[in-house]
Length: 310
Ligand SMILES: CC(C)(C)CCc1c(C(=O)O)[nH]c(=O)[nH]c1=O
Image 1 (cartoon, rainbow, N blue to C red):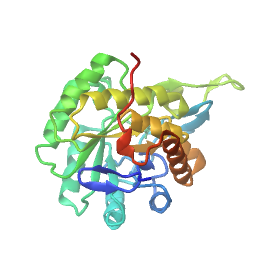
Image 2: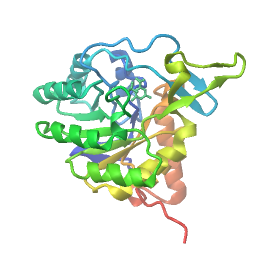
Image 3: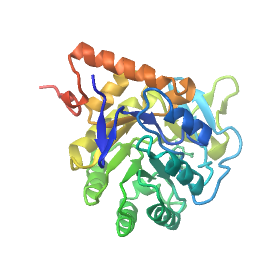
Image 4: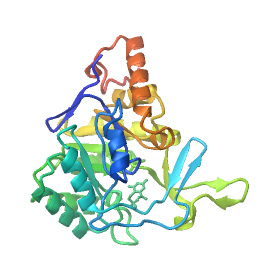
């Protein structure tokens, strides 16, 4: 059984990696993913130009069927993650995530990466906020087109975007129409489901401190939304634009489902947070077991082959 995939000429000997933000803040965490059996790659915590502490107080919580977070982009700064990925990029193809809080920050960071010795893949996090009072960038279609136009006016290395979930068929059409106009290597869908709210039954309070308790949802609870976004974008995007499926992966069947919906790679967030890097070997073994049940030896035999009902 082979579990290979390729994006922008990079060959992955495994389809699994961490989701940006999880287990990827420090070199120590990143090393654990790099060395984990069953992980084909890694992505760094979304970087800003300078180091950030992120939000104060409890900013991550477990809940039934998943997690809620409002971290606030804590990270060690772009140079830290550039240094790490340049040092290790000959061992596996690596993803460097960036999330500027302004368009200017995103463009400045991409100019730095363009000029650097990093030759891996960049994941531009479009869930980053835009102008306060306006929706996040990826929910502002004109702004999304504008930033990608400026990015591709100078950036020539492999680049993809991390997208929040969409919930309206017209929005799938609109974002795909924009993305198809750019030489993207991939899209990673989904980011957490934004602005959920969880109540602690003991205290009748929210469970995280920032933003009055509003935060991004991850884990089992987001799987149907994640699969819908993978499927919808696979059906709409040019085949050259590959898909990283993220959201709701807890077992090998979930990995299989993301691939069945069209994913080339599959990333794991909430479950990795709770189980640690050993999860990758478990997920791969379970994926192989599901494939064996179905008589598949290669991912190409079923990738994107979800059938509809008559
Ligand atoms: C939500 C932002 C802070 C704008 C970006 C970073 C981010 C965070 C975060 O750092 O709070 N959490 C997520 O679940 N997804 C993200 O993309």
